[in-house]
Image 1: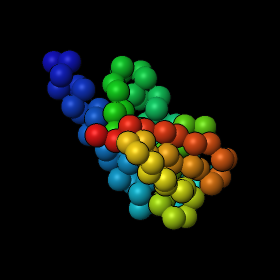
Image 2 (image 1 turned 45 degrees about the vertical axis):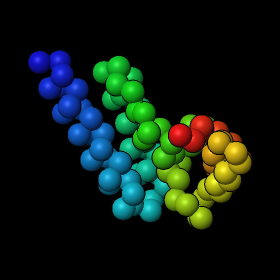
Image 3 (image 1 turned 180 degrees about the horizontal axis):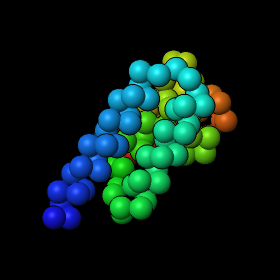
Length: 93
């Protein structure tokens, strides 16, 4: 039962991310990302790879070339948010 609920919730989160990628209105995007984070926390679901799609500090969705800069050095991917200046670093596999 719990597994089925988690699948439904992850589908809802995926649907919200697909809506975000089509929309350009920053206020709607921030509200949707806040909702995604709240849903994930409430249901103890990890965002995994989806957490790399937005800035943790200002909650803006990353549109490559528009509001983020990506640098790859050795095995580390650094994503710089051009809205707030926050740098997120991730290991590459």
